[in-house]
Image (cartoon, rainbow over all chains, first blue to last red; front, side, top):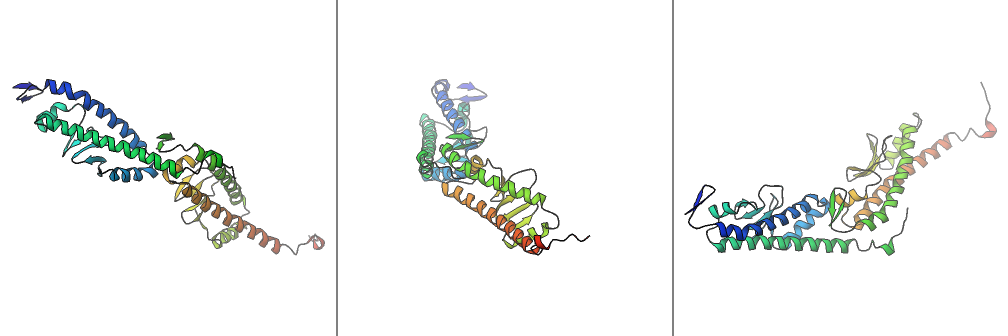
Amino acid sequence: MTLRDGHYYPYDPTPVLEAYAPTLEKLGREVQTLRELWRYMAPVWKKDLVSLMRDEGMEVMPDQTVCLSGCGVILSDHTDYFKAGDNGFGPSHLLWLLAYVVRAPEDLERIVTGIEEVLRRIRRSIERLEKEAERTWTHVIPEERTITP
Amino acid sequence: MIRVGDYLLPYDPAPVIEKYEPIFEHLAQEVDQFREVWDGIAPLWRPRLKELLTEEGLEIQNNEALAGKYGIELSRSYIRFIIDEDFYGPDCIPRLLARKARCPEDLDHIAERLRDVIQRFRRAVDRMKEEAARTWSLTAIEERKITP
């Protein structure tokens, strides 16, 4: 048994931490970037972004969590960044996950893959929104600019 | 995403601002004239102007002339539009793009509604001038006599 942070584990979690901590940190940074975007998104476009995220098959909860098949990211300024089932956790909570949620490497892999998929779909929604906005405003092109006071 | 003021927009608003800024500036200049009129109108004529503005379908309250949710503020200190019940200054395009206008038609619609308020105001002022001209028309130059 290995004792780490007050819990006994029936295996040594060190290699798991070494393997997955950088991944979670990277995903955490991506969530941070998306949170910035979500916070400052012009109100007139936020509804469109939510529609596009739903269009991408994700659920957008009232608490600003974006989920797909039980995995998700939290876009509000919460201390937790990710969601796995009902559990919220941050990039530095890997050991906690191993203590309470994840029993096998496949479980951890499934959570990481799920979060990555959510982030990919959010990014795709943003790209679609940008294209849509570009199309919407396309006729205000430089050639047509006329000052008509 | 492009930051404009406090918000991020999913497109480059520079051409939009360039196109619509002069339109709103022109509207602001007109509002400036009317708030001058409203502020300086002889007290004797103010109630009549208010009546005429009301006849033209404008609601006058708290120094605001409103047609529905759109209007102008007649304050001495500010030039402000009222757009969908919110206040906006002449440099309002970035804020409008963040909060109200999702497409060019929305901006056109807002400008149109403000223009309509300004037209009604102008019509009321013109009617008052015509009315005053009629009222005082018998004081023609030929007839003017100083009778102390």
